[in-house]
Amino acid sequence: MSENTERPLNFIEKIIEDDLAAGRVPGGEIVTRFPPEPNGYLHIGHIKSICLNFQLAEKYHGRCHLRLDDTNPAKEENEYIDAIKDDIHWLGFDWGKHEYYASDYYDQLYEIALRLIREGKAYVDSLSPEQMKEYRGTLTEPGKESPDRNRSIEENLRLFQEMKDGKHPEGSYTLRAKIDMASPNMNLRDPALYRIKFATHPRTGDKWCIYPMYDFTHPISDAIEGITHSICTLEFEDHRPAYDWATSIDGIEHTPHQYEFARMNVSYLLMSKRKLLYLVNNKLVSGWDDPRMPTVAGIRRRGYSPESMKDFVSRVGVAKVEGVVDYSLMEFCVREDLNKRAKRLMAVLDPLEVVIDNYPEDKCEYFEVEDNPEDPNAGRHKIAFSRSILIEREDFMETPVKGYHRLYIGNEVRLKGAYYITATSCEKDEDGKVVRVHATYDPDSRGGQTADGRKVKGTSHWVSKDHCLRVEVRQYDKLFKSPNPGEATGNYLDDLNPDSLVILNDAALEEEASRVTMDDYLQFIRNGYYHLDKDSKEGHLVFNRTCTLKDSWAKQKAKMGL
Image (cartoon, rainbow, N blue to C red; front, side):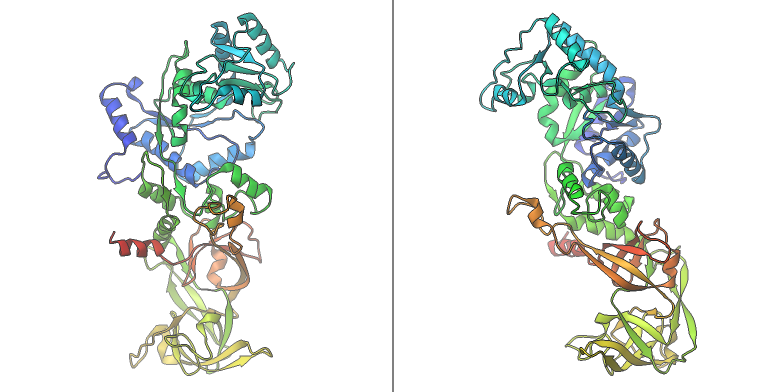
């Protein structure tokens, strides 16, 4: 959501403003919630929901809860809970004292289930999962009632108590709501409310061996917390009748309403926790926070800023129609933000030595360079210059091609912020590879200015060979090579990009890099945006490429006249 007050209201804001004007909001306070299941790390798609819920609460002076919908202990871990909270804080949002868990309401949910049984509205069913699927029917054919649907209330209460006491194995019984097996909405065909599961819960331990189902727990949790606007993605639209059924159970005092918006799908990225978990468990990535992963932890480690992601979500907007957002738009937002905040450093990723023969051997001088020319408040720092420097190997050609304006024998180039140099010769190894270039410099061109005012077309970045840091640079690219992984073959693993990570072990950075922390955003001049990795240690710094400098989205917009 944008902070621009001129932006038209999205459909959810219109609903909220209509509800406030009509007095349909209890107490006049908007209450939203972000309710993730702690069965994996949050991904980029969740950022849209986080921003929407927290920013709506902020805009309308309400509150937003964080609720962990922890209804499946077999897949939930405290690691995920901690990561979720950390990610939300990184985005700049805080829920204050309003941190809740679905497991907080297990006692209440159990009592509601007992009440439904006593009222003849729920029953214990012994159908197997396969039989239940068969009895459920299809979209065009009604379901069949279970033979257990007409058990007596007394028998249902006894069996449900035995389920709670752990007297029956998993899969032997479920508690189901007695609604309508002929309903056109499949979610109302006697949905399961409780199942047996012998698993230790991260918060309740072994207190329970029966656990409430998500579609039963989630709406009642909303009702208990006084949520006014339950906002979810479109895949839950068909679940809305079940949501309304649950919140209309006798004894539930507050009735929240569910509204659906289009989830955020981004080309080249997977937004499935199941598939992401497969990548992690099968070591196809280094973990949930691998910088190639579309998780919030992954993009943080890669060097994305929270501001860039909130800008991205704002540009995508809130709608009711599904679509796929171009990956280039996301990178455009990242570049737009980093261009304003990233500190500029000279980094040579594929070093080639240049010896300036007419520069004194024992001399070292320092040039002052800007930290960020886009930031008027940014400072400056110094970079050492000496007789032997390193430039990018691609910035020298022994035999130049047409249009090549970098260094070649007899050609003069500008060293950024330093001197003009002219290549005079080169040395090669036994395989014919250039290993060293010799050059001369113009001492009157200090700082890139010459006495005669001559200009050159080529400019190279550089570092002093004896005054630099040798570091590891991880060149990350998209994890998948297809905009829609798996579309062609049906298997997303077939589209894994073998070049999604290239490691450079001998990159050279100016000494200023030793002062960098993981809170800093960096631009390696001419190479892209980079970020210090958590694997760094004293004597061995590691930098991740956040993204290249290429601004393909801006070029696409220009072509389209946008």
